[in-house]
Image 1 (cartoon, helix red, strand yellow):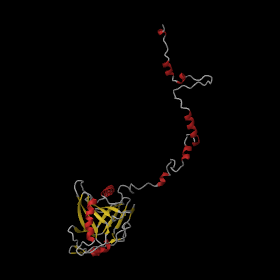
Image 2 (cartoon, rainbow, N blue to C red; image 1 turned 90 degrees about the horizontal axis):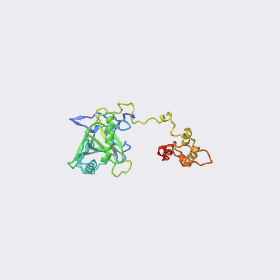
Image 3 (cartoon, rainbow, N blue to C red; image 1 turned 90 degrees about the vertical axis):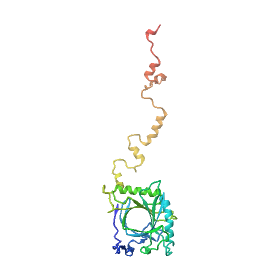
Image 4 (cartoon, rainbow, N blue to C red; image 1 turned 45 degrees about the vertical axis):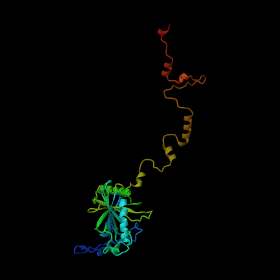
Length: 318
């Protein structure tokens, strides 16, 4: 488990003028950047500060950012995200009051409510991060279904996975992340989580997706019950300390150490035993004399031979 805090980011405290946060002072701190190895298609990707990392998740710190958002009602996350994506894509390609075309940024966030029912549609919120040049003065959307969201400073628990961000895969990795967070007794917002995507639908290989949970309070980066995570693999040298035979020993050596016949006699013993069937343990031995062959009745058990020739009592003779 690696625990580290990156001190490369030094964010000044935002100025407040009549209750309004001056976002321009923070533009250098939260602007999208290209420092993410998994962000390969967008010129601008949201940067973050890595707080810590374990085998199952990592904790990131995000500074305040402004997003353009829209809601979609659907039974499945994939359907709702597709509906909302069209509206946001139209906005960045000119459907705004100034007709400005903006570059696509990453990641795309889907806010997913935690309490969903199969027979009722849910409200999914899709968010695009605004480019750095429009963080403080973004053009207004022409559609009344779009609005701006100012996300506050936050720490998030992140689990990454590949493939496509479908409803099934998103639920699977959401379950795995919540299971681990409950195991380490981490506090987080249980009302919703984020499904996060970095790639366009045209990218087929090396896709990157994430699940986010917003942390409540100080994030947990250590296991409170064990000094190391329970899923840490055991050292491999313990196998050599075992008194048993090492798995790498060849098979003939194993056979030669056993009290049974050596490998060269195994085949001959097997052939001899198959040439003449074994005599039952309750069958008397055949006569050793070579002059007269044994009678068939001599191979039968004593009680069987006696029963086959009952003795005639003297009273029965007439």
